Length: 281
Image (tube, rainbow, N blue to C red; front, side, top):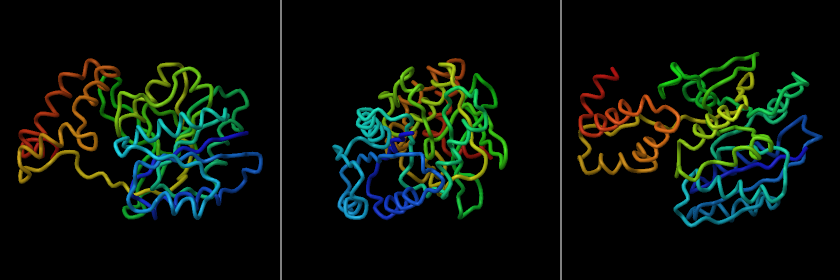
């Protein structure tokens, strides 16, 4: 079996090197051949040079500086497709893999010889807080965006949306729905992809146990009142903020009945952050 490992990096040299180090330490994958494809989006911390020096086998491509996460991953994915692998492993550059992570992702097919191609998702733990940081999410209601993390130590769980910190995608899924949508600049793209895969008839499965470690570095997703209105408006539109246009586009596509509520919430967060904090409280 041939797996293409996909990453996008930007100014996280040490984390990227640690991630790659955990990748080359994978066990119980003697039958697996893998190639690594990294798009570095014009890092200024010598990420490219360090990767080339320590991991010369990596295929590394330079971005324009404006690709962000989704754009960098699409570039890596498009390059990897040229090599015709069987699977694609989407991996965040700040994720440290457990030594058996890839083997445990592949065990899904061994557990059920009749299993159809499915996206397999690995859960990560935030070691600082001792809780699951990224993985699979289940919707509270199919008509609303709200979701919650699901996790099991010993069961395969089907989820609705998933983070691409550790996400294994078979070629059959790519043949049918393509890669990450170019409608998204930074975040949202992995949630959109997993939802699109389910709509196309594929399962999205969370593999049992913790497959890696990754700190949840997302603070509250709104700016407090002490931040100026102009800065709050910038955050509203920013790809690394609330990604206003892209988020509403995502909601319209997958949760059209929730669109009015999503629109109102974005503006309350921005114009009346104190009110939003009270609502959340």
